[in-house]
Length: 98
Image (cartoon, rainbow, N blue to C red):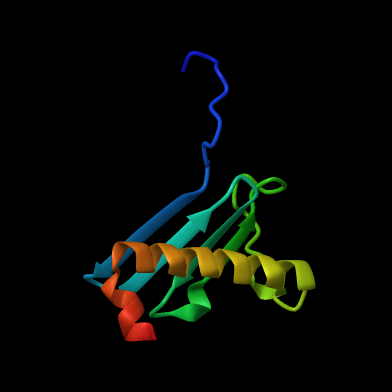
């Protein structure tokens, strides 16, 4: 707020959302300054991956490009970060998945 540079600050963001009304969904997401991965653990066909640097409006879901080595590596990295956060907070969804 003061325009000072803060050392050791991470702009990464973890989020979770579960829904049990009309549809069932267990969404977990991880965003870095460059990428955002949204995983739906009940409906993997709804997963989303966006390259925020080139697509800040999140108009092009790149999850279907998982055969691209860069995209595959990003998915693996962000998936690991999602699961690490789930472990850190004791998310019961993770124990059901493992």
